[in-house]
Length: 232
Image 1: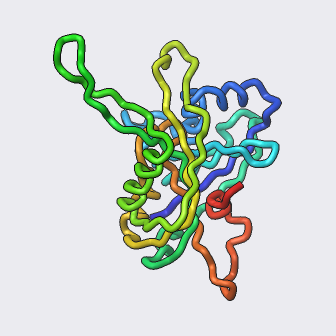
Image 2: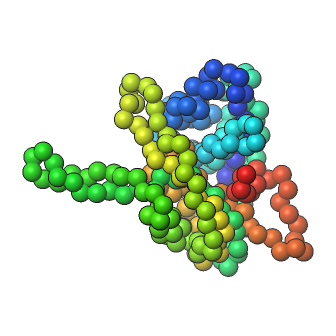
Image 3: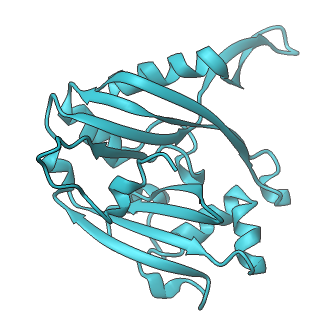
């Protein structure tokens, strides 16, 4: 299972950058512009694209994971500083019983049945906050092969679009950081490969993992996927 990881540090002085960062659909299109055109009806799934935006000191970082090599030259000139790493067999280095740090920005939500105008009931998705969001992540983490040992939930600004054609696009966003033990490595690899939860096209679901090394073990200095899991 081979992954590519791309780190973009956009130039915040540019108008197109600010437009992308403030509109989830525009950012989705920008990320997908890194990959070939004329894919199938499910282009994001075809290339395995997942991404997360997060503040880093006085800048913003966009971390993009994919199953295929991105074409950085498709970005507008000067759009961002970039770094691309081929992770090769990184997922194969994960083992059961390993202690790790994790980070994921996700859409904790659930479907509720509410009365409809016709007298029936329809599904309505609602955002989860506080302890409900923590429980949502605990269940998803268990399915992803992680036994949580500590955790911190940080609310993030909702992902929205200002385009008239995407007026209803809105995803509640929360960031989950902490430590865990791998209890099902196959489930964890699958979760990292596929992403977790809803909103994967719009910056949700990318799970970053950092093995917690023993003092005698070498550190993974400079590894963008691993350092992305550290708390900023």
